[in-house]
Length: 336
Image 1 (spheres, rainbow, N blue to C red):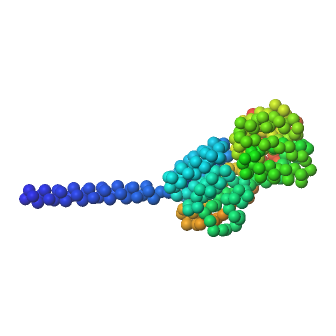
Image 2 (cartoon, rainbow, N blue to C red; image 1 turned 180 degrees about the vertical axis):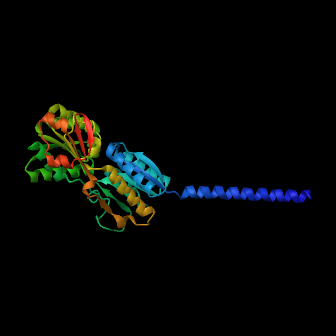
């Protein structure tokens, strides 16, 4: 009888152990099934941080479970390449490059997993995709191509400036392209462009100082190197009494800018999240998605600093004030 009880007890313990092992194995398999996405960002500044946030929020909203490995290249190309190699060694399931240099580093490293770019001005010129249309490949993403001509036309309309200044990063593909677009726009509008090139953020202030006395207004495009040092540009322009326009509204709060007009980068993040969803949840091939452009007017925001306008003696036309998303007046931020 005791032997029967002992055998029964051993059988129960064995079954319980097997059950626990199965449950643990199932849990490990479940954890392993959650894909890891390596995210490489060229530098920290509000616009690119907003892309990260929008991407995460969208995936959480639609219930796509992923793990993220966030890395920051701190504006250094060699670091961007090191991050790409780290992701490769870690065998991540997908990679996301926020801004052109890191996206290029990832695309050059990975041919066997999806490579998603975000906030890249011209992915075709950057060599990320062979065309804007569908193709056979593993790279897709969201462009932040800005309406440079319209932005400079707005700045000229507001200030009457005959000479526009621009500081850009000579080693950043999108910075070079945007400076070329600014030059073409100025030529078309009958005004002169005075540019100053920088190699890194530390040079932004001195570059701005080198041209500020030669321009009637300053235009700063979505050049990551320069935008991350926008307070330096702002300080120089404010002391010289030169109106400043930024193509990135997300980084101007607290500065002496006149106007900011550009993308809501959180929405670029949401669009990036939709591409990731299409690949992981809906089984789409990245090449079939290729490049997404945001063209809805609601994807852009226009901000005016009325305190700066008054100080400079500039009157903002009523039609522009009516379309503005944010105004600064009397030291207060007014969200419309």
